[in-house]
Image (cartoon, rainbow, N blue to C red; front, side, top):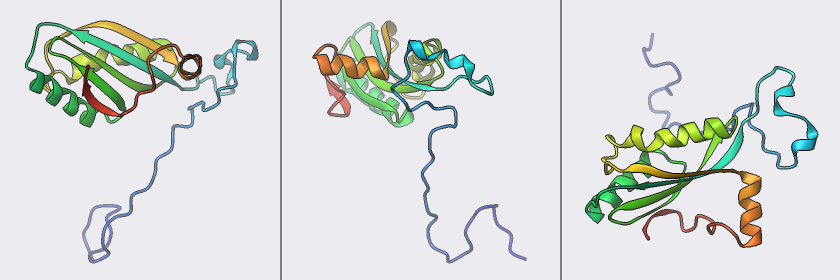
Length: 161
């Protein structure tokens, strides 16, 4: 009898095949729902649907070496793969990403924890959060189409201001 971890391929079977994992069953990908169409709380199983929220988190504090700031933001991007872009200077930074959450309150709560929870592991500067913007996907795209708001997060990555 062969002993192996459950789900491991037989010896000599080559590499494992990676598969894609879709969004959760409570994810709402439609952009057509509006305030006239009823509240999201009216689902049959009384669970709220998730939405995508565009997050802009601004942090600031005492000056830190530019190389350390960049390295910390790159580590944060590695630890939190949903980051779109980070811009930084010696005394402040801006992080932009998409968050999946049930509502604005949940998205904001997760965003407000991001810097503090990763401060040690990513060796981020001891800066404080000085700004937070949370907008839904429809509003984000509307702003971009009208020429308002920040340009789309491209190029992706960590860049100086």
